[in-house]
Each structure stands twice: as structure tokens, then as C-alpha cells.
Length: 213
Image (cartoon, rainbow, N blue to C red):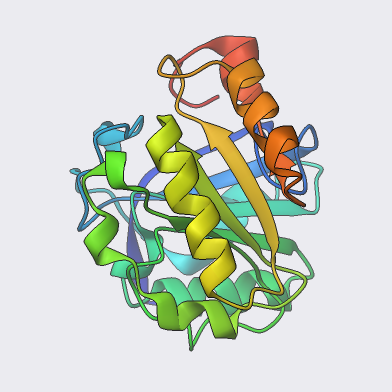
């Protein structure tokens, strides 16, 4: 375990901008690499890089921050097999861990105590064919499904997915920044009387697209 390494793009401390812990001070561990190229991706800088860190060094670095909340993100963190070991270590160190994943990789081996925030790629992403719908049945009430919506057709498609599958996880609808307004998406949700949460990206409202925020 001591020599296990991961390719880390950045580690930073900020407010959680999304999902259940929104607004809470958190440490973000961003892993390098992603198999997808979504049209609305806002972290393309995480696709490449070569910064190998031992898991022990990662744990040591995050301990300087006084928060129990850790978010492992990317890119696609599960693209690196050692991510599962990192998640285990974080849980062992009593952190409250969330994992942001694209949903294109099997989540079966993710530590059961990790809260999974899984994207469902909508058609405007250009990557909807990569959705692994078998992951849905592995999610529980502690997890969340996130639909990033860039148009009304994306919205209709997302509603159809919710009607097709039995989902126990919480559901988030988030507008593509700059494509549709939060008010538009709010109106659509209310019009359909959907039991979903409208999610805005708090970090973008505060800091725009500034890296490490």
C-alpha cells in the first residue's frame, strides 16, 4: 500500500459547489484522465498530466485542512484502478467521502461507505451512448444521479430515463452553464411536477471558471 500511486491533477480546498454537501468546506482530489469528451466539459485541463502521488502523501496533504468532507473527482477517477484503494483509505481515516463519476465505468467495487454522485450523460453531451445503466441498481439512497441539461430535448430525454428505470438515489437536474437559464429549468421541473432537485453550480456563481475553486 505504501508505494501505491495515482496520477493527481490537483488537490484543493474550497466550498462544495454541487450535490448534497453543497456549500460545505471540502477537500477535492482531482484525478487525471477521462475516457469521455463531453461537449459541456469544464475540466478539460484534467485530461492530461503526469503527477504521480503515493496514497500516503495524498492523505498527508489533505490532513492540513479542517474538514471531514472529501470529494474524489476528475476527469473520471475510476479510470485509475488505484482509485478504489484511495477511497478505502479515505474511509478508513473517517472522512465523509463522495465520488464524482461519469457513470461509464462499473461502480460495483466502490467502497459501500462512499457517496456516489453519478452523471447520466444527456444527448447534448455527445456521450450518451456511454451510459452504463446497469449502475443504476447499485445506487442507494446515499447516492445521487446528476443530469446535466443543455436543452429542452435533454430535459425530455432525462424525464424518459427517470420513467424507464427504478431509481432509489436522489436525482439532480443541473443546467449547462450558459446554455439554458436556471429559471428555464426550474419552470420545466415545476411544469412536470418532478421530484428532483434543481442544482446550480455554487462554485461558478462565486468564482466563475477559476481553476481550483
